[in-house]
Image: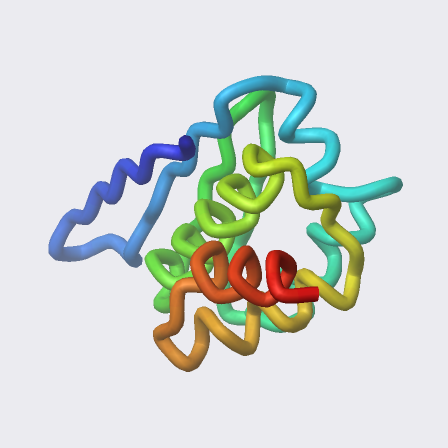
Length: 112
C-alpha cells in the first residue's frame, strides 16, 4: 500500500510524498500518456504534482487531499480494479467529500 510522508515547514507550502509499491502500479496509476495524471492535475490546479520512479511528490495547499487520492487509487489497483478516467473522476469526487473510495467502490463492484 502507498505510504504518505507529509513534510511541512512553517514558511513552505504543504508537501506530501506518496510512495507507490512498484513501477507496474505507477504506470497504471498515471494512465496511458499520463491521461489519469492530467485529469487529477486539472481537478486540483492549485497543486504541483511530480512523478519520478515510484514516488509522487505533491506540493500546494491541497497536497494532503491529493496524496490521499493517490493512495486510494493505489489500493484499488492493488485489489485488481482497473483505473479508467470515469473511476478517477468518481474517486476525486469521493475524496473531496471525505469518503474512502477504496471501501465504497470495492463494495459497489462486489454488488454488481
